[in-house]
Image: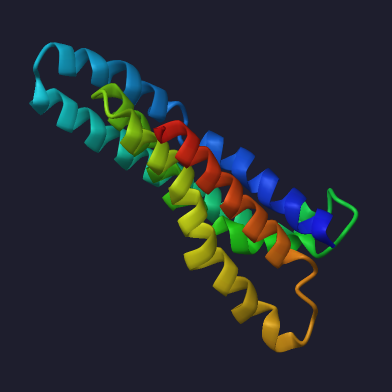
Length: 168
């Protein structure tokens, strides 16, 4: 059961990488150039465009993951994957926003802010959104949590430690 949740969360995180569609790297590369040219107007426009496009694309991916959670889960051996995919779909947009914003922070030489966004945003999302959603959705049915707590807390602690090491 722990493996089902861990696999579902890992798969969703991989999908989140495609949700930025390379726009996080564009924010990093061109943001640094615009900063060097002392063009805050272009930097602001770049961030607006990258965030807007990433939000639109990741929202589409989230909708597809939510709607097609059952067929996607059919690719795996455990049907409980559908529930995990549907829950994790809700977190795709915030994860992508965090990645694009983190790279923008890196482009303006704010590595501490970048580390915090890349590592604490997913931890906060897990605790504030995904974890309570699991209990609201599955808890009332009387089904066991199937190791979700362990996966959620292990990931949260991993992200917090990574952020702490990155900032130091």
